[in-house]
Image 1 (tube, rainbow, N blue to C red):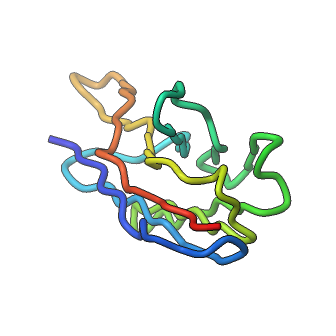
Image 2 (tube, rainbow, N blue to C red):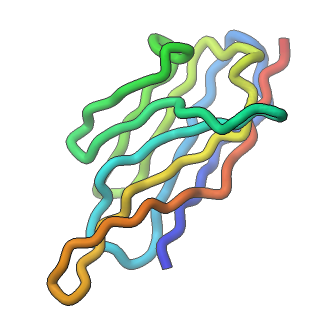
Length: 123
């Protein structure tokens, strides 16, 4: 069974930085696209940004210039470097990943979600 585990969430002051990690474990061939999402209390889950297997990234306008997504394919891990944090960035942060497996010679993909990690930003 494939699992994603996020870590690195914490309480930080406004203007501070945090680095979140998302590590994949289990039996699978590789990972295609990966993404970070966040959900604040009373709000819908929103996309923070994503990264392809080749390293191309995209970001929500609200985090451009402050957040950076990267990944280490050999470690099956994705990162979210968050700088200049604002109170509005407080949320539970989730990662997801497009897991690639082979079955009976066919390539299959399946999206998997992590359980989330809490980021709290004090003003």
